[in-house]
Image (tube, rainbow, N blue to C red):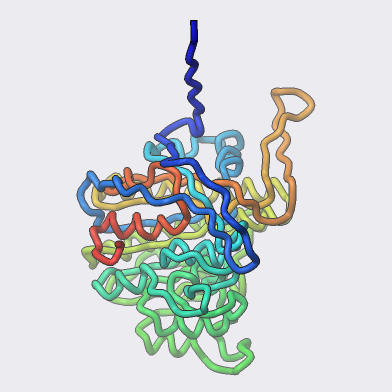
Length: 382
């Protein structure tokens, strides 16, 4: 008698994860890595269109980084509030991405080379979701615990051939259509610290921005633009006393963006999860992960009350090959690392709100852009 056994693998504890078809190995060259999961042609948006999008990016945040919050945070992580879960491949045109190419995939829906900011493999500018939605009168905001000109936030508003061109990125930000900025990077705007001596703080003011360099405000005027540039370069770390900047900046941005606008897009980045991975410093990594989870809670609280907001949480890549290993006993967790760089591990995507069902499954990082655009029923998502 022939017996057939079906084995089901649980890839994640919640949500539905599936692969549309087997992946075939393709040729790899130094110019391009094309080993992509196709989009699902049967994908259908079932819920009403989202009026707002909050994209939360945990830089360097893989599944083990998320898992650490479940073991080291004193309260249940806000990740447990999600029900629509997916997995995402993070490769750029190379097998392993950096933050610039990874964020450009999110912001513009195109694979590109490592180091590219808002440009394709031929260094041609690609329209970003911020630019597309701003043209339709959406308000937009950027938050980062690094400098606001760093690779991840820059990829949503700038177009340069290298992520190292932070002075040019600052110049482009100062004339962009973004309404709310919070993070570090003051040195890239100030004439006293720029190599060309130009004053882009004044350009920000000319573009309608109120500039704060000391701390976040308790309240903001929805008829003004705001640039909170609170450090010369990156912000300090949680362990160094940054406090609750990220969750509070997220809350302030949401109050501001929702006060006088029908639609908004907000990107908030927990930058230093990645840095803890690069440094193989588990305390650093976990403290940043817990801080990022608090920002997730702020976003979910807003979305639950609002009812029209799509929240997406994901990472550009995993960093450090981070693992929660057993210690001397199986009742002891010993965080370990396999390297000091990025890995090509799939990373989780969690979504809540209208259009969140689009983020189930396994897909390429470029699909984040297309799924966001489909969630707001935008014709340019095709």
